[in-house]
Length: 352
Image (tube, rainbow, N blue to C red; front, side, top):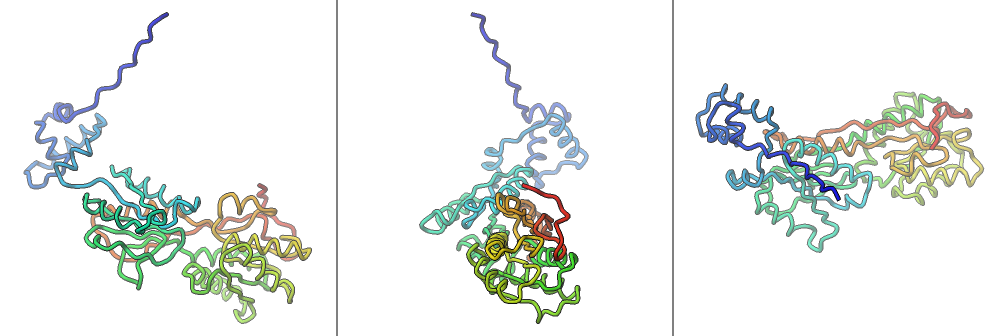
């Protein structure tokens, strides 16, 4: 039997190789790559070292760097019920993409799975000198930061600290999303439109309703003429609210607080013999995977930019200077077949 030849593994590039390429000493390479500003190295030399490192694809030993500089290359993501929500879980993917490009790694703490709400895990990260913390939630809500991490750079994504405390916060532009989907409904020619929202005190619901109101006003619709009901973002809530509205002077279109409520509204319409979109148009919000595009007809909706939100949060965390404030990420209007002109067949072809 013929013996198999082992494929030679490429040799790891060392600082000595970089020094030889740049024409400098190995200590100089160490000073430059570890950003030692307390040591005098000419800027031209620094540039030459970085060019050599890039040309050789030099990969620094992060563990050794951490020991030498007492600097951590770990970012802690404190997630509250996030990993159980597939679409919101894209926030973590975005964070990973941003920090990995800068040479950092993510450590995710799912607080819902721990008896102490993740306090011990966060305390351990802080003791190890974690580079920063990112708090994340499946929906915009207030999240209290863990005590003892006041000096650690922190960003909130899809959540915010209680009491409007100053913080770097990344949120979806719920107002813009609510405006865009409502504007599309009015542009299709609907004047009798109902709004079915989630909890009235919910941040996302308030912002989406505010966007709806602005679009309605711009279309010349009196807000006093708009039937408005609030529920709980569940299918049953959308069904019950829609049944009440559709049996009493039914509108020609319903704007729902999210896709699940839109599914409930669609079920209610079908139970009353109403066709969507020929008799009633129904739109949602979230563009929830394996739901919005799988309905009959597929739901016109708004996609939440979860992955971009995570990426922006990671980028802001690693920025040299953090300025407290809310950073809004645009939502995307997604046209499908559940919206058409009153009494007309859909014009946007999008079958599941």
